[in-house]
Image 1 (spheres, rainbow, N blue to C red):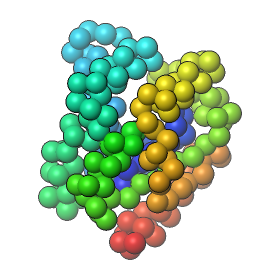
Image 2: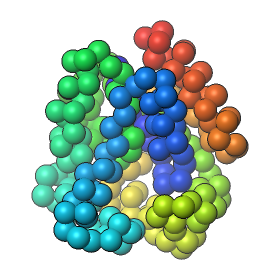
Image 3: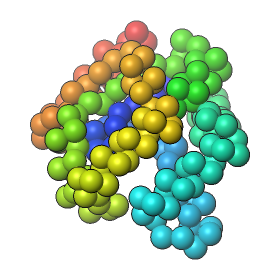
Image 4: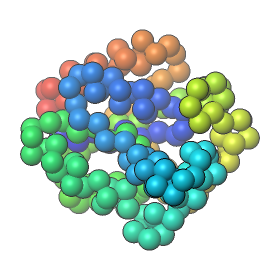
Length: 184
């Protein structure tokens, strides 16, 4: 099974993915490709540079670029019998690519938090903090340029993440038990 985690910045996707990792799942963070390219080019990891690289990658490889570029990793983990969790499935085209290549083995989990909650988290996070204005601009860019709304709208499951981190952990564990382990 492949669980693609979707959600807007600051919703808790990466935190949810870390809980899946604790449960023994293989986690692939699509955004790692962006950070690897930034490091290769000697560029600072920040919102402006990340956006530039994300847009360059998609211009070069297509809007399903991150799914294509991670396919070998996904297939490798599946061949080992692992549950694969994708942290940060973004575009509609990535969603379609995953559906076309993995069919019913692919489910989408939307981790939702309100803009107010997300912007507060993004402002206070220790790595790559964003001001409210930067968070708003990122939201707009991801919806308008990365076709992010489609996978969110088509999510098979939703976890509401407005509370403490322990609440999110409990919801991920419940999802794992009820969906992943049961094969639903």
